Image (cartoon, rainbow, N blue to C red; front, side, top):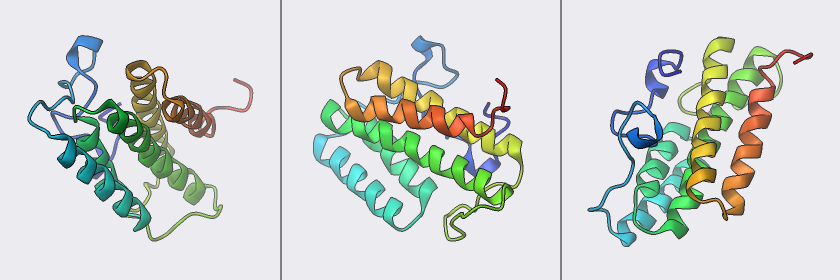
Length: 158
């Protein structure tokens, strides 16, 4: 999955779901992060999302998800998944000549393989959010949205 993502969209080392759950990168928990800084990262992610800077937003939501407060970390993980969903949608829309946003940063990839990798990454993050915070409605919605985005890359008869 990581090799299929374009260079600018690969998750940084040290970002991800935790080796204990079978992932190839270490846990996202940061014991030094205070609740106030966690909230600032979440708000910065929202600001980047409004400006269509999806990868900058993803980085901020990733930092917010690492904080100690689950009430902030749950929606941050869901929003992180949403950024990858949006990138996957823009890749699909650009390839299918549908309406897509030419102003997002980074621009959507041109190949179906890269778009599918973004959709798979979104699903992976959403499932992690759902497993970590099973009672969060935002996390459940993130799983449903990620499955919908991935369905765009599936064959019609599967």
